[in-house]
Length: 73
Length: 151
Image 1 (cartoon, helix red, strand yellow):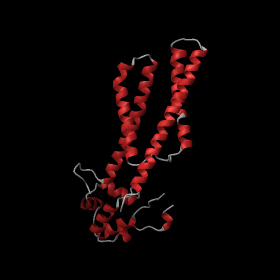
Image 2: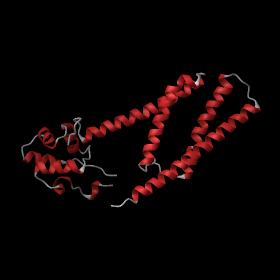
Image 3: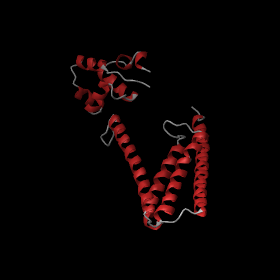
Image 4: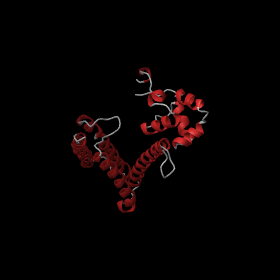
């Protein structure tokens, strides 16, 4: 089973671009509820959505979504 | 990421879970309604609508899962399990027939009726077990076909 931790890296990348959660959600075409759930670790997004987030924030998948083995059980 | 119905992937997932709960609810409530109505002495022709809806729902669920080579969540297809699971409908039919024949109709506990009850339960058990085994064979074949598809 995969336990998703809070994704603080998205929050940090967003803050670096002075982007609100709502703005990022609109840019990738999801609701703010969904973006919030991703950042809180309550929702595991599809690879398609991960890539869209990476494109908007100018980051790689590794930079935003890679997790250490300790988060996977 | 949003599609034409203005829903993103997480919202769609939430909606699917809601719909799954609704289908489960309809399935069990419909089954309970059919059993209760039959126990109350309602004739089959008056509950034909419920029976058709239940058969359609069950048939669709069974055919769709088999077509995709699936079985059940948290349970692998297994003969021993099928043998065990078949006891449930046999027990339900047994209890239903018992209540209907002895309690609601006020008949005494005669040997002939008891024999009929046991036979009904046994037939239900064998029927369910055979049906599950046929479904298991179809699922296995379908799973193999889907797994063997060329890349």
